[in-house]
Image (tube, rainbow, N blue to C red; front, side, top):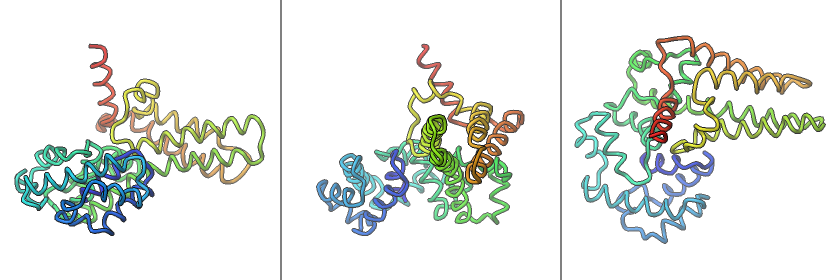
Length: 288
């Protein structure tokens, strides 16, 4: 699971990262002993064969460091990390982030999955998926959600991963809706289509970034507030509502999600998303 989180926390497509994970498992690198015995060149070739081309060299280095850390610090068993953290989620996060290649996003992805076998981590849903849970009417009270799932950590893990897909789906609908603008083609529909495709790539791509760059906060800060994102979704959805049924469907879905975001802005009990708070901190740091 830690290898899965490490590889998927890079800003590449889900399909490519999953192919790389499958390849790593296929050659047996999920066995920490076999991973530790592999050479850097061998790990690089495995990642390359899995389509992990852009980050294969750094990934190979991180996998080697992972094996070394687990063997030396945890006697070859990552379960000892949980014991060292006294089954405490915050302590576990601090220790798991000592693994090179795992930032905050990687730790969240790891927790989403590992709670199924480390019940003391449950209930856990990463911040962005928790926002989606609220929009879907599930709520943001993790204890209540966990109780509704019968305190089943496996079901909690499935929910956490499923909600992240919903965030990506909005970006996919934008891209497909943008492509639909090209048929029939005119200068105005092509221009609108290109912009909508770019918007979709940005919205979906944010889910794959290990850390959102400061310039994204600076130039697209509206994406990191309920009000701004809601207005943006409604705008994009509205410009797609014309001519054929697919544009109407995609535009309506995006627009309704935007309305959900607007509603969240006026519910005091729901805190702003964590990435909005990070944006505030980064601005303050730059000004100092």
